[in-house]
Amino acid sequence: MEFLTENRLLAQGAVIGDPAVCSALMEHDCDLLAFPGGAHEATKTASRQYTLQWKERYGFVRQAALHGYTIMPFAMVGPDEFYDHLIEGEDLPDTAVGKFLQRIGVLGEHTRSDMLPPIPIGALGSLFPKPQRCYIQFGQPLDLGRYTGRKLTLKRQQLIRAAVALQIETMLGELLERREREKERDGLLRRLLTR
Image (cartoon, rainbow, N blue to C red; front, side, top):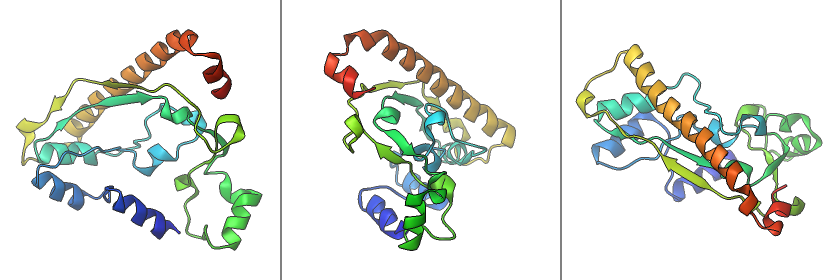
């Protein structure tokens, strides 16, 4: 089952998050949209909404520096709330649904519960997404051209990564505040469907 999901993503233009793949794309001057937290960004629990799931990852900084790329921080508010989580992915294996998925072979003994997506529930208990407003903001670009062809020290990687994270976290806060201020503009139907 994991194989089918991976093939579907690849067919839609996603690439494997591997440094060799990233380097090959950058050597051909391709623009990349990277989520440093990888799949953890997509499968995070509701309690982790609007938080970065990067752990101690620096690959995006190393690759951007090595190839002289510019990092363009951005933040988005809204999509994390298209669906509530009926069951969190990390809890799924211990539920009746999880046991059933294990019996039919969808979940196996090597399935990582931290990588499982939540079981979603949308508007009015359906699979339709809630009509959330989406807010997107772009930060200040960080041009890493001066590091082209160089390997950065861990300290330099940490500084660059921290600068990117600070911009994103600041923008998320600003967007959440803006959304809260603009909620009064929501019509009755939107308010009912986004509870």
